[in-house]
Amino acid sequence: MNNARNQTFVAAVLVAPFVAIYGWMFLWPTVQMIQLSLTDAPLIGDGNYIGLENYDRLIHDKTFGKAIWNTAYFVLLTVVPGTAAALGIALMVSRLKGWLQSLILSAFFLPFVLPVTVVYLLWQWMFDIQFGIMQAILEPLYGQTVNVWRNLPFFMPMIALLTIWWTNGFSILLFLAGLRNIPKELYEAASLDGATRWQKFARITWPLLWPITVLCLTIQLILQLKIFDQVYLFASGGRTQSTMVLVQYIFEQAFVKNDGGYAAAIAVALFVIVVAFSVFQYQILRIRGPK
Amino acid sequence: MTATPTASRRKFNLGAALLTLLTLICAAIWFFPIYWAMVTSLRTDDEAVSAGFALWPANPTLSSFIYVIENSNIGRWYLNSTITSVLITFLTVFMAACCGYAISQLRFPGRTALWWTILASFMVPVQALIVNHYVIMAHVDLLNNYIGIILPMLLSPVTVIVYKQFFDGLPREYREAALMDGATEFQLLFRVFIPMNWGVTAALSIITFIGAWNAFLWPFLAVSTEEMMTVTVGISQVQDAYGVAYARVLAGAVMAGLPVALAYLLFQRRVTQAITLSAGIKG
Picture (cartoon, rainbow over the protein chains, first blue to last red):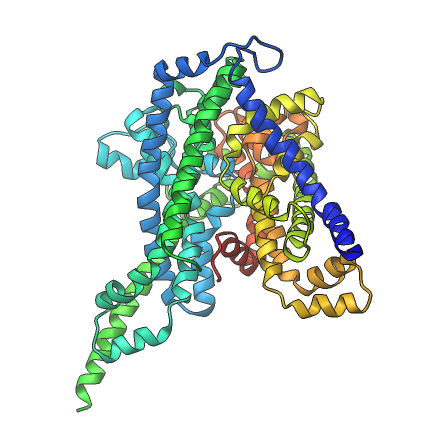
């Protein structure tokens, strides 16, 4: 009895810091977000309760529709192509041994640890309209040099490209871990049976990697729904409305237009979308069975 | 008898060599933007725009780095980034270890509820909370302040989840033996469980540090003066001050990326471990 009480006391002390931060920085802002979304308050200061008016405005807001569409387009451009690229790279890297493997893996993984602003400056230089080295590829293909960050058809695909370049290290590592977990005996047995490289991939590697593939796809999906940094940095100074994404719209309404209530309503929408996809991810991952 | 296997082996090796070559080419292309930024930062601004495809500067110089150090607040930004990142790392890992330990090893009322809440919050987009983080921080007057930058970034349910699952996997005997010897729960956590498994703590610390150093959105919102910016925010905000001066801009970028790149290159295995652990895969 005494022991149980002692354990409860110790546990309370141990969980207290985390629970305090969790309550203050997560639960409290979540409740506040919902409250704020029902008012016409500015970012800082009081407003009037206006019921669901902000949500009604949201449904009819063209820019919000645009932001949803752009976010979906970006997700489409990054999730499946990025995961496919990561799988290809992981297959290539896993063949190598020792120091060569570490070296090559570092080359592929290094972008992942860089801050987004470094990625931004680096690609701005690569694509500079006058001096960028990428113009040497774009010019023959397109007929002229292209200011990709001010040219709408180029904007999202290029952001997607550099996002894949930047974030793919994560999926590559997961695939490599998955490949390492496939028993070598399977390949040896297949070799004895005279299986070709392709057959080994199609019959052994791919099916056994499928759970990891689903994991990578869903992690990427949820990550890329929250896109902001790259789009904001590359679009700033230009016409940001046409390349607006969801998080950027929250930012704009709150910090540029000073419309806290409406920004909170958009935030609630993002919240709901991401949680819905996460539940969906959880269901998919559960189908693969208990670990 | 002997001719066929040799021939097939030779063919096999050729295919393997070509694949290796292809891998090397892909890796070189992938790494090229980083290389190109580093090379450009070693040029003068005039050479940067006139060099074309020259893969190595004619006269490598650190003048762009010196210019940026002397003409921007990068020293101060470095200090800000270091202070906030170290504090975020230490506090996040410490709180997560304590909380993970309690959930894993102790029995107390509300334990299951707490665990499920943490698991569920895994899926919440922090980006949706920026508006209210800002409102809260403005209310307690912590904007443009280290504490204000740090607080919202301490929210890391994944770290708790990794610790909890890791402590779950340790044999019960250690705990029982230590308790028999009269150790308290705190001693058990800080003298036995954590020291016995520095690897996990190191891995989580490195990945938390990298994440904190790289954070953009919240530090960008929370800071209103140039003196309080982190490196990550600072280098993107003042580039206009140099005009079109790519060598200088990229010198700043190289300096901003250096600490995290080094952290990865030095602790490659730990970073890999942290990532596979947080995705719930055994590496």
